[in-house]
Image (tube, rainbow, N blue to C red):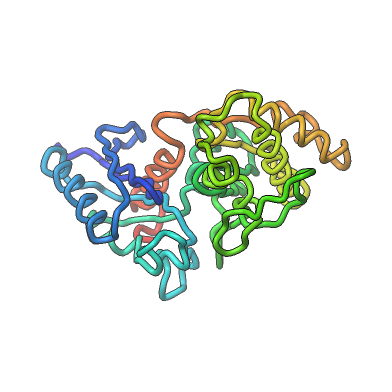
Length: 306
């Protein structure tokens, strides 16, 4: 008897994580594919899902948690396409259309960080909350926002990594963002750490001054989200946040920057308000991709292909 299977893809600038999962969201098979040129990458994705279809049968629906920027306006003629991404060769690629053609099934798409936020609010550190922000600090800096259990789809998606923040005292680094130079991402993402200090984040010693800068810039993003979005929780993940001491440093800097002003019942409890993701493996982006795939299946009450 055929079983309900769902496809999830976490599409990143360096790797694509592809998986099939059961109706409960549990991953059955997954693989990691290096992100090369689009044709090469989609051919490898197709080979994986063709193999799984031969073993388990076709998937009912698919979900893509993609790097961006993405066109997420449903009525747009370029809905589901990447826009002006800095990833060489990927601007204007029809991410949704190409995955849909591979899966031959209803397929949903959202940003990788929105999907991570969805995973945490449904199954992780954000369960039971109505409004949540998820920050990822890695190759770039992205922010996903959940409102009433849904990602904030519309004419665009948040690009909070590209906001301007006050510089840390003594910081004269030019930044690495190709568009804005010293936006938050340009000052604090993983490549910024490498460019600034000539050493990768994972190799920095615990007492390196880089961590004070990181704490300042990540906390500054949290302050802006707190005063503008008013989330009930901010979850901070990504490769740079794997440094165990950084989360507490972000909390302490957040307390200094807000100075206690206009905090509410959620944000005043800083240790609970700013927290780590619950999902580690599989990644929250992949969990969220599988979740939007389940929602894309007509039996789940959605409108099918989106």
